[in-house]
Image 1 (cartoon, rainbow, N blue to C red):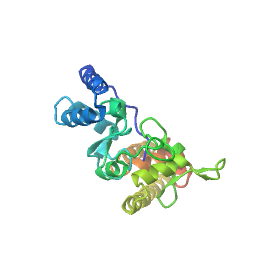
Image 2 (cartoon, rainbow, N blue to C red):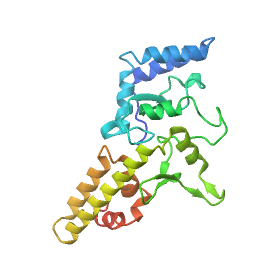
Image 3 (cartoon, one colour):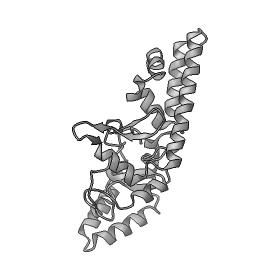
Image 4 (cartoon, rainbow, N blue to C red):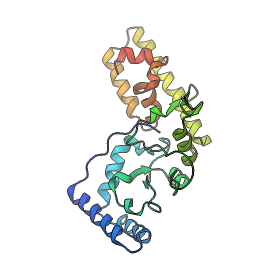
Length: 241
């Protein structure tokens, strides 16, 4: 996971279409079937295309999954599952852009409505670094809650439902962290030798933050809580990023 930008506004014509579709679902005698039908039909239309484009824009370069940050997004995800929350099947605020693995893992699970447990974290409306941290090895880990004497329950449930601890995902994040550390250390060495100017450090910082394969690690260590750790603290102090 990573922090995402605020949800942009849709064009008025698209917003009106979503409202019309939502009203039709709410007025149906079988909202569940109607929600499935209308959403399925909408995905085939031209008017829905700007919605996908806006979601892709929110995801940033490479369109990394809004849940795992490690795979390319390919599917519109209903944060509140349309199979349960029929009236939210066609609401802009309920759409995310995710990879197939995360979408399949989550399916229609949404505690506490569908099962016991804490509500999963929405990366668009919440600061994920209040619930997670990336450890020294690159693993996405729930923060410890002293008042509960346990890991953060929402982070733990989010990891479980989305399978954010799957081996391939953790391993790729570990490799991304090693790569970023090496680049930071090399850049600092050149800077301390007088071979790089401060403005070059800022440029490199911006580049790392927008690299498609570094969205979560770069955000955490260059803009989030991890910026206080070495060697990121030294680099951020000089680059003022």
